[in-house]
Length: 320
Image 1 (cartoon, rainbow, N blue to C red):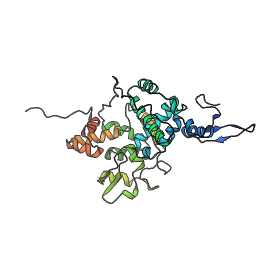
Image 2 (cartoon, helix red, strand yellow):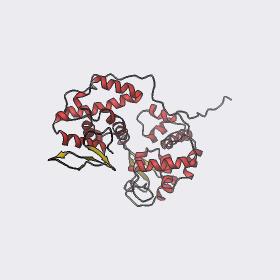
Image 3 (cartoon, one colour):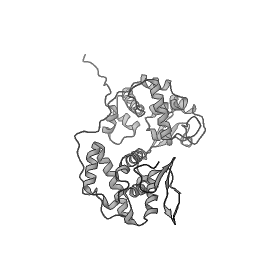
Image 4 (cartoon, one colour):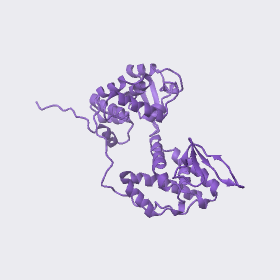
């Protein structure tokens, strides 16, 4: 059955979107693929074709395929894709570019609360690209002022304990155990662990990783513990960390396995990123130096590192 949010003659059949125009009295079927944004873009081209018929969905699709989008950090790309697919496409996707007014953007941002300004930024980027392509002449986000919301985005405040890490590790399959062991010893982000740990970057003394978010290379000294973990990884791919089939992890596949693992452990309120938080907090416990935590997390500003240290009990010496 066709979904109600799809335009005329575009239907969902199984995993794919099907376009069914009438040509010479007959229905012609065109498989537009499984991606909704791509399918809407192709539908718009086949229905109209000229730039006056371009929709906001077309602009989103062009933005996702653009050089500017590809240069963003991987985590930012994931967030922007989620904003577009699950939020903005439902509201603006089928609307012609010229029909969106600043008042529409304002109402949308107000409704979304503290994340609304991020959505507005993505919409603005898509419109700027559409302007360059000649699809529209105005950007309805341009006169829009950033809204300061009373409800601030909550910051995670948590002290992470080794006991919780070990409880989760205990019920994990070997592939997840290896990811965890490298994660809390290096403080690397999930995307770097799954996509940037390569056998070719491993030497006798160091593991070299080019961090995706900052593009800076880090060289981790191979101490006995880290070396032991890496040597336990079977060499079945160019990537050091692989799934049970010997293939590189996908983010969605890893997230599903991680959620099941954490649920089996019965450890409450523990996110995968808390392993990175643990690395920062444990570094400070051992070195008593925040700058060392800033270095292992590859942060430019110490205030960013302090977010990861929030909630951590500070050890103090009593007066004599």
